[in-house]
Length: 513
Image (cartoon, rainbow, N blue to C red; front, top):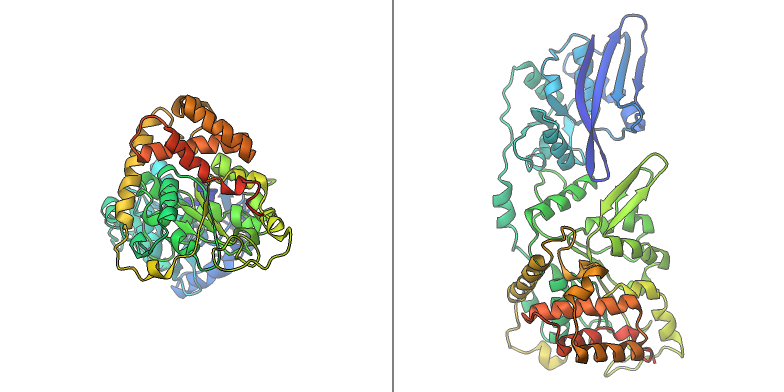
């Protein structure tokens, strides 16, 4: 008797349906697993046999064939334990298999039949609804994550026995319901860090406000203890809240990476990822024999913060160049090619030199001749070109640190950022892939960033003096457009352009002297 149920596997951030077929034959005593299973699936026979016997069922001592279709797609992971077990019980006559075809079923079994949580539940739930299945049977720890998808019966079970009782009709399990919108809107403004806690640094806050308003990349250069990391950690609190669609995209990526944990729900806030400088290029962009999303994809729709930028290996930094432009990363392997979204805002910090005190107002730099330039050369010109704002951070004075003056809160800054983003959303209504000024393609620059005669002369002078590249020219125009949006101006005025030009400090030839 051939019995079929359905599981799923994840490639990239999307799921594909897998049919799990089992047949018990009389002419033999072997167990065959076909359909390109990996080692974790092949080993499932031992977990399945132990779990079945724990609940008083028997493992068929005949010729058993389990097929995972389509046969040319590699299947990986232990989540196929539950569907394989249920099809085996159905094929051997120990379970009524009538309901099995109505559900997508996944779950890892322990030896005593309990179910362990799995990865990639959200994209699988989305695919399950798209294919018209009645529901999704999975470990109870993952049920709330799957319930993010509406109009789908999410059946959370704790053990193999509970799944059998549900399939046989002996036990009614109420589908898990989850009000996605209520949870999403309740958690939007819950931040631990606030710019109100930062004394002084008003010019840095202004630069970060511009970066947040236009989605621009930024690097902060300053001595140790000047507050670079503290300021960077507060950037998510001034970014506009994500849309529900963006939150779903972020949650899908974190689900595939297995970062949501037990009883997880929608990720309601923009991610903030801060990898250590020892990170490998594969960990940063993603990959591996079984491709997984890297840090730049985990920062999708949020912030990727690279602290002490020159300390990262040059090869690691260089692999970011293409994703920064295309806002996605493509991982190619012999059998599969997957795309991971990578629309992130790059925020980085660095010391001006190895000792950290070059250009310090009070302390002397002890670095020898040429050392500062060699230190800066650890970051390639093409990568630095892709960073829109270069911000010099100076130490906060004692008077500023002890001042009782109330500084501007993140909420107040965020209101201005949201207003600027609304202007940009309206401007780019006819361009579905463009949502802010930083994403503006070259063909829109002339239309959106028109300059008057004074502005053109000012930019020409800056290009000649600083020796700027064509990409830096585009970045200055995009930043000046954002500054104009914050000011509520339809046109880019010379003062907006001048402020944008001053944020190209590392392009100055004499900066390291």
